Image (tube, rainbow, N blue to C red; front, side):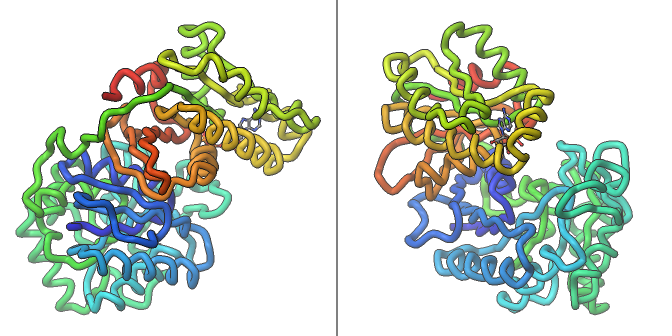
Length: 419
Ligand code: ADP
């Protein structure tokens, strides 16, 4: 293992692993801290935690457990992956986890940079922009758990840290790796422990990657990862994304109600008439066992041509269901049902499975007993095929699509790009 990564949520971990693979580093994502060793040949391991919004002390304990495992298995550099919108509160968890990792690594200087210009996240003079606006003027202002109302990352991070927080501004970054390294040395000499770093484009991220080669720890979004594999002598190559050949029936389970998923479900039903089974939450609440019904329906239909089981619905329909059942109860009921469907489909031979929806993916991965995912070919930005290791030795290929990712033809495209 070259790079050891700790991600504070599940889809963020996939996003990071996907960027590493595209830069030439063979990567595996684990669900939580593994019991055993990583699979042979993994150059990066991303340990996916769910630590973004739990109490800081718990996030620290889980992150330190991940760190111990990564170091035991040879990680040469540690990457703490946070959200590109720097999701946190004054209590944490980005600051406390970063400092705990620094303490454990005996490291007196690190950087923090959530920039991901390809996704519209840029940092200038320490201020984070989402698209055209400051972080605090975009939708993150209203986030239910981590409302981001201060766009200054230096201030945000300083409120969470004991160490002094500084800035490496764009005027330095654009002069390249040597200038960045010189500024890091100067800040360190001044007693700065953590530096926010400006970045406006991928060239900035590549310059940083080179400058950060010797840092024991990096705290960053997934963007900074694009410049790191080169430090280990790796270059982009198709081999990094290679998975064993897939086989088995093709199926899709969709519990996402995003605009993109609605369009994808509609496009699929249009192209494959009679190959969709709708799960109605109101029938579920009335006691109908729609998981069993969906699996019975799928029975004779499973095969080469994909089939789709979906709860995906338009916003008005979702609101009506939520009004009747409650937001959380409706979500949990649908997630449980779709997870049983996914488990049943895989058990019946659907070894090429696409799941749409972040929470839905979490529920399905749990039901399937997936412990590790090897990251393969990208289908659309941010969504790769993965090979899942369930501990039962089944060669299962999984694509987990969160929310608004993917074009309208995503489901068909997914099966077309899978070798
Ligand atoms: P996304 O990634 O688009 O946010 P998620 O799976 O994370 O998708 O979240 C969608 C949530 O909506 C899940 O909890 C799911 O169970 C729930 N859901 C899916 N279909 C419906 C529906 N028809 N009515 C109400 N809730 C639904």
